[in-house]
Each structure stands twice: as C-alpha cells, then as structure tokens.
Image (tube, rainbow, N blue to C red; front, top):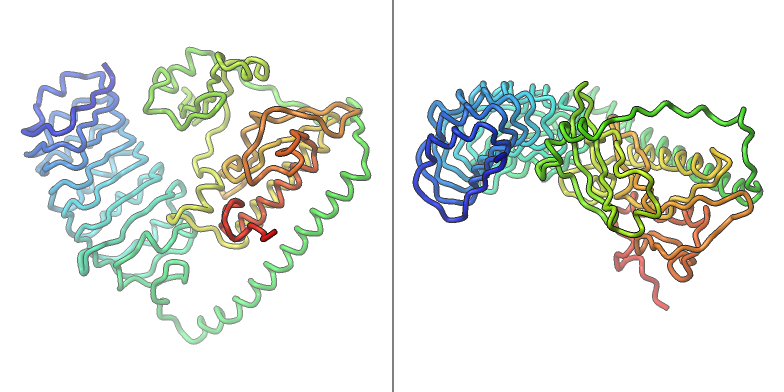
Length: 450
C-alpha cells in the first residue's frame, strides 16, 4: 500500500501505529476532526512524498523536528490547524518540497530564512497567520516560485514590512499575494505604497518610464513588421523541399525503457499526474540522473491515437514555469509588456520553423495559450502537436475532421475543416490579442454587432 486516504469526519488522535506502513507515499487525512499533536512517528515514513493534514484540530510540539527527516517530501499541507508557535528552522531540511501550505494556523513571529532556501518550492501559502518582520531580499532568488500568499483577511493579523523584491520570480507575482500588509512598499503591480527613495532615484525612475514606453513601442513595431514579412513570404514562397545537405542535423534522441519510466513516475502513480487530455495522460517524473521529465502516455484504445502515434508514450523536458494560459488568466501571476513581447517572438520563431524550416510543411492547428509552455527565463516553447498536420510538396492546404479550440481557429477551419499555414497565422493573431488584453477570444468584448 503506497497511498492512505482517511474517511471524512473522523475524530480522535492520529495513532502512532500509522508509521508501520513504511512504504506509504501519500498520507491524506485532511478535512477531518483529528486533534492532539502531530505524531512524531511520522518521521519514520522515509518514502513519504505527500503529507496532507489540513482542516483538522492538530497542534504542534516537537514533531516538526522529527518530520524534518522526510527529505523526499514534496507536499506538506497543514492549513487550518491551530498549530501555534513559530515556524522552525528545520523546515530547511525539506529539500525536495514543492508545495508548503500552512495558512490559518496561528503561526507567529518572523519567517525563517531557511524557508527561502527551498530551491524547488513552487507554492508557498502563509496567509492569515500572525507573522511579523520584513520580506527578505533572498526571496527574489527563488526561481521555481509561482504562487505566494502572504496576505491577510483580518486587520492587523499579518504585519510584514519593508520592500517587496521586484526581481526573479517576484517580478511575475500580483497584488493578491500581499493583501492586508499596509506596511509593505514596492512596485505599482503589487498595489502597495512606493518605497521612499532619494530625489535622485526618483528622477531616474521618472526618466526611465518614458524610455520603457518608447522601447516597448519600438519592439512592438518590429514584431508587427516581422509578422507582415512572414505573411508576405509565405504567400510568395512555394513549398519547396530542402536538399539533404541543407537540412539541419537531427539530434540523437535518448531511448528510455519502460522500467525506467515506471521508476521515475512511481509506477505512474496518481500523485505524479499532471493532467489528462483527449489522447492521453501526462505524468511528472525524475530520471536516475536527476533530470525532471514529463511523460505523455497515450490512450491506445482511442482510435485516433492509434492512427496518429507510433509509440505508446513521449518523454519530454518538464517545464515547471507552466503554460501561458496560467500566466495570463491567474490573479497570482503577472507578465509585463516586454515579457509578453518576448514570448510572442519565441512563438513566431517556432511557427516560422514549422512552416519553412523543413521540406515538409507542419501546421500546428491548435495554437493557443494553453499550448505555449514556459521554461526557465520565461522562454516560450510551442507544444501539444496532438492534431498537427503534415502537408506534402503539392499541398498548401488539406481537410480534417479533428477540430481545434473554439475562438482560436481560423474561420475556414471551423466551418469546413480546412487547415493551412494561414490558419496558424490567424491563430497567432488571436494569441497576440489575448496576450495583451488578458481577455479570452470568446469574451463578450470581441463580439461584433451584426
């Protein structure tokens, strides 16, 4: 047994004997009425990856010191428990921690620096506690951080002060992470008071703003001109296969055995599941050499999958930053204008490669924010070629019965199933509109009155 989920509504104390299940990977006892201290014997579950104890009546003694031996723990969810006390420095021992939720736990005092040393931490929720002190500058160096909650819904509950860093992962956070902290200061995107600065610094800021606006306009103009050039070239240039000597050399792809994939994903356990789609499921895994991967396992019982794919799975690089969809339409994330421009330029370059990089034209057919994945440094990658089409030398368009996303596809694709490179360009235009307005193409503001 590697997963234990308790029934809802159970009360009493958590028995020490639970540590006898030494092979446990997931322990979920959330949303119950357990009381008393968290058992110190949980520290014996060395294979445990997820410990979920939220919404109980648990308290804390020396248990956190014992739990620090759980070096494989990726999720620690303790929200809505009267833990009291301060956050211990031993939290820094959770070196693999990705999600740490300890909101509404009556935690007092300052946030220990050891929290900011958790390099894999992507989600940190400390809201609705009684925290004090300042936000350390080291927090801006957390490259994987995507969601941060230091906000408070009760007056005078969380009293943090100082300047909010505006670098690293912090540059993409929004005001929702800091609500209720009136003593914080920082950039306008956080909706807090500006930090006090000298007259000279203020002059630099006032001069830099027009420069940023001018540079943004120049970059946007260059991007539009590049798109016009690509459109013009795609109309004039006939589909001509490249000579073998002109074609770029293909990489030697690494072959990974099924056994290695099973070990990397804990036997394709549900705890590693990233999501499901029409053609298969995607799992997160870690290879023996430490490389983080995303494994797409196809549903071979689906007739369309049998016709399209030759292999049962694809192993891809895992991009932890997430999709453009998440960054555009989540209140916990923020992209400035230059970041959006750079992402769109990356996507335009990828489309140019698909349409003109090889002798065979590749039409993506489903270009949308959810299929734009972001890597380190916000570098954009075009993914999910589930319904992509290959067009031969004599074909500039073809018909298909597989439809893309409503609102993102060209009219001829939606009405007649006709796909072409022009359809991808149309979808890219919709992507540009959605990126700068942060409105989905199905939003009422884009409907024309006929």
